[in-house]
Length: 233
Image 1 (cartoon, rainbow, N blue to C red):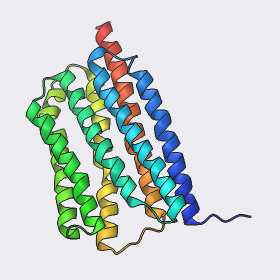
Image 2 (cartoon, rainbow, N blue to C red; image 1 turned 180 degrees about the vertical axis):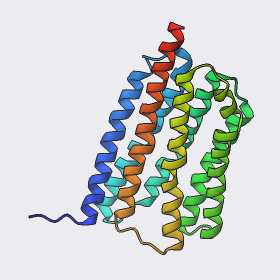
Image 3 (tube, helix red, strand yellow; image 1 turned 90 degrees about the vertical axis):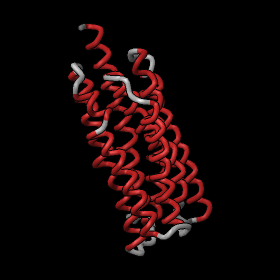
Image 4 (cartoon, rainbow, N blue to C red; image 1 turned 45 degrees about the horizontal axis):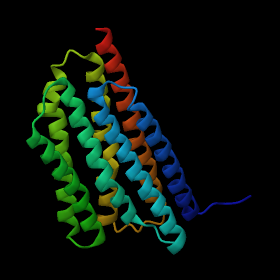
């Protein structure tokens, strides 16, 4: 009986993550032609996020095979592109319910990029770990504040589109619960002195598949159902 080591499972998780994200990206690119024109942008943004995360996972697997070390850098390379794109997809989705400001658009871009970048600086040792963790946490909480109490939430809440409100609820829940793995992992490595032997990367890969692929699939379903409901109304 063959016993797999953690490193083997980590390599397999990178491959599984790459394949799952790539397939989901193709599905969303095809799905962008199935939805109402006003919802094509958020679906396409999710597809681009999936492609970025898939590329990072593929490169991470290559780096792991070449060096034998867990390449946490590639996770951050994927997140700094994919997570802001998912936030912007929610901005465009909320824009269907009510016009959103350009200022909010740029705040979400900057905050979501800095959220990932600050965590990386702390984990890589370029910034004090406590400061980097707190900055990343504050930026994540700011995004949640906009999603729950800002203009996006107000526009969706006042919308007459029940399917849009339901889809926004579940997408926001993914950002709330699913994204918690990222500051948690950052906390474990920065304050717990944990050296990733592959277990954390496996958790990150599973989380990416759920947080990005399922997010994209849920948004696509919302776009299809909401668009169909709008045509039938």
